[in-house]
View 1 (cartoon, one colour):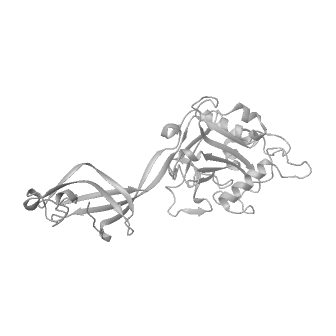
View 2 (view 1 turned 180 degrees about the vertical axis):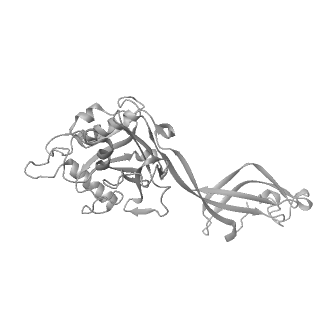
View 3 (view 1 turned 90 degrees about the vertical axis):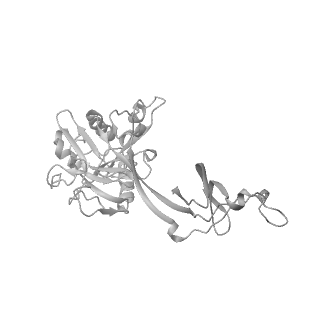
Length: 339
């Protein structure tokens, strides 16, 4: 075994982006949607619902994403205390997403340039196990249909020259369009603002209920009516689920940035031609015992070990087959470390 100190030019760092489907089996498009009837009928069904790719009771069932409903006035679910207005599960959900996305429960969501007075949102969060790094901007294709009208939504990542950021990382507006670009103009009405916010770094889509109602019409919107009854259970996640499942299309790709450290190990013609095995030299004189290793030595490189300055082995690279080395040959071995 021979040692050689590596020089700074022997190192190179590179980053590669790998994309894959965000759904079951690395599929980019989810076409079948199922929920749990038990969860939907329970108290949590008024503000939270898991969505599966098959029956929730099947052995292969996996949560693909979930739907949460939040309302700044606490509408959509029963109050915690009938004597305290505005405090309910939906107000708690709304406050949680305010903290996650905006960093403060006192801040309001701004959709495009509009800040709705009553903030009513749906949060679609992709199962964290379905993506490693983030969601790939420009791949969002969410279709909602109520039977007579269909709305196709995407993010506007390809329409903006400057990316905006908030507490959740990058933020894009959700618009009417496809493949990361609006069909025309801004892709939404200036009256209600954009259809929501796309947050690829946390795998979350915030939908603006006001814009959805305007697109579908007051009577055919996501909510039951234009006014919410804070003392009733409205099963809002189930309503949005019906619009998604009826369309049969929800496309997303995940993205992972893999940093690679390339290490170039060079064996020059004069190096690594002799064996370090003690049996090849005389223990008393240090002379080479075999004449073939005096005039025309050769060795076979099989392994590269990477050590630190404390002589601790950090990584081992195995060659696919032994590499013959003598004074007439030079070798360049590229070691790649992914992390």
